[in-house]
Length: 350
Image (cartoon, rainbow, N blue to C red; front, side):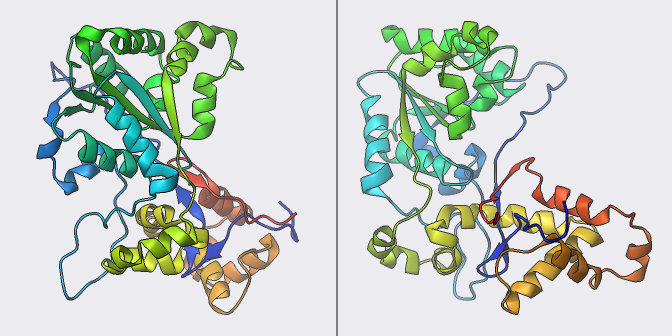
């Protein structure tokens, strides 16, 4: 990276670094000795706070002196572009087993939309979220041992962790197909979420020849896909104004989120804050320099030369003498690395 190039690192709104959270989780390691691979829970018995156990992203925190806020802010419906369709597909599982996959970008609200849909449409059903001994084997055990019976929601959040990149894929896809076709075991709903590029990899024929043998495309042919909108429209926010005004987290998101990306703002903030708190002095200096530049009117785009020179003023002598010549490049690599975060690089100017 040379001086004068523009950097895909941006701070928007109230000093919010535009690194968008992802949710690429790795299943738990196998425990010693036998351990249940699954647990069925009646949906109507689940509390709102249980959404976190089903991997709905925790929301940012705000102080409210007048009341104690719930774990999650109220759910803002998008009936015309999302919720009516999703809930219709979920409701249709009462008549016939089906696989529904919600596709959308990171932290866009996919899991929350699914959570609200099953609570609204299938409250008397049970839900199974296979996690142990790891996700693929937990799912396969549940399918092979008959844990998924009639009136069960099979919760496959981050479905790529079950359906891609593991040595159980062929068995899982075959077992899922068998479940969906077997009327004696239905009706059941397999409900999953996945990023669009990963769904394309799973469902399209342009994969490696050996992947074509695992049954992925056949299972994908049975799926109904629901596309998650990236952002809220102005009309949607206007229609939900009363609900939004009832919760300070939604108010903050409406006022500060970029281009209506309310869900990303709410879900990304906790991860961004932990990333900032755990950063070493040099990366924190880069962030401080960028935030202060935005406070004083700088555009959201920074050349590396400007940001490097500005960050030097935020590093104390002890930390400075511990850095090598490539400290700034290493900082950028770390700040823009994806890992569990999916980075928004759309602010790069060419």
